[in-house]
Length: 277
Length: 170
Image 1 (cartoon, chains in turn cyan, green):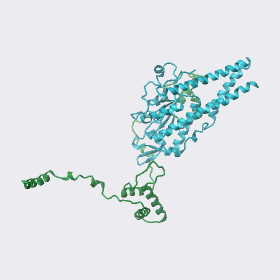
Image 2 (cartoon, each protein chain N blue to C red; image 1 turned 90 degrees about the vertical axis):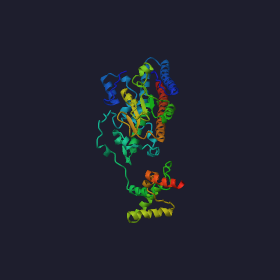
Image 3 (cartoon, rainbow over the protein chains, first blue to last red; image 1 turned 180 degrees about the horizontal axis):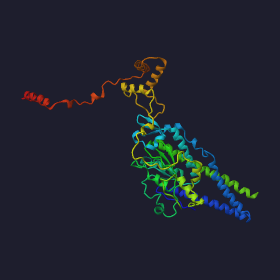
Image 4 (spheres, rainbow over the protein chains, first blue to last red; image 1 turned 120 degrees about the vertical axis):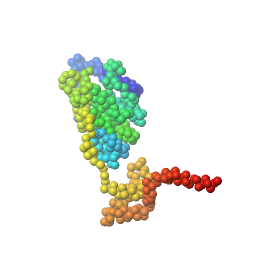
């Protein structure tokens, strides 16, 4: 059983997650034990391989379809435009590496290419959904004080984690000493804003790359997108845009988790019927 | 567990893949996201890019400036009439400002008739007036208004003015 991680954020959700993880693990082992009681010694092996086969099927099936969780239905180009996602900073603040994602500059204001943003956002949401489906820990990071409460609320609603306060140097890189041995680190980090309060790149991006954790991040025109695994070029300053991102991520993660419960029930029901044949 | 903290060498995926290939990381220790990344890779490999020491002169040409043909009309409108009588209401996405109405009328008249630019401009203004939009010209130039009348006084003139006044009072 993997120990769960504590972050200075939502403790209630952590407790809830620990409970659900514990219940899932317990249910799996309990069902195997029940089968062993009523079966002969010879048929014990096929039952175990069957559960393995079922577990593999649950994990492999979603990867074969391009949009298993139908995340592309959650947003449209008009939604992005209405939320002012295309408005970036002034031309003087532009980062060199963001130039391929820009549509143009209108009177010194950079405009982000929303066609590219659509594709990137679809990839990012799809990846998040798959990680949530597999029971991965997702950490939301945003150092913008304006949206700190919103991001924490979003994390609480999906049952995941958030970190919107001062980032202590060894949070990820020195986790075993700061939190205790055998800590489980997040499997995905989502940045609602990749900059910290002094307009430098957030330390979490470099630390996540160091600890081999993939990142999803909203990159504005003054950010560096090179180390982020799935960047989403878009506005990170307007409340409307950040609310849109929070809503989308919350819906994707909840959808993925519901789908997982559905798949488990589906395959969990079909597995016991086969040994009787 | 084995790991590789070299964030400037390759991507997260390549490092984990190579650790597994070399046998340092066992198959059972494979991270959760590995299969997902393999199935759905990002558009660009998240490799670290070294920052340039000196900004290249060609950086300005990569992002084109957005200009439309109607911008010429808009520039003339703002020069003559200022921002227009009605304030901008950006909360509505289908809002049409006075300037935009002017531009639409201008393009309409341009398609219908083949007149000179200046004449078209005046025609559009007349047409909008007929519809009920009052356009007030910008009368005083802003440069003149900023001059303080007090700054133009000379101290000697003030003294000269005051002394006859004092002599009169006595």
